[in-house]
Length: 83
Image (cartoon, rainbow, N blue to C red; front, top):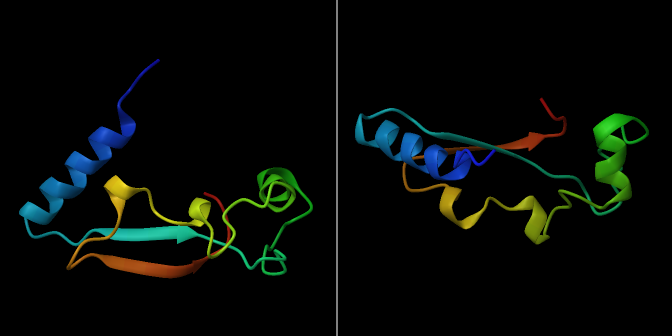
């Protein structure tokens, strides 16, 4: 089912900024060798390690263009798990 999740997320963030709320961006990324992946041997995090997903400095660890942090937003670095 098509839900337009990304389009709706962009609209919610824009409305939040308009109302004076802070927008937080919490990306996930791992070192090139995934040595900082806390559970690289199990579940989804094993897939991240094996597929070299969310590797710092690569396109798949960056925020997509429409959801990149804007002036006044807060970006949190250091997330290592998926939830």
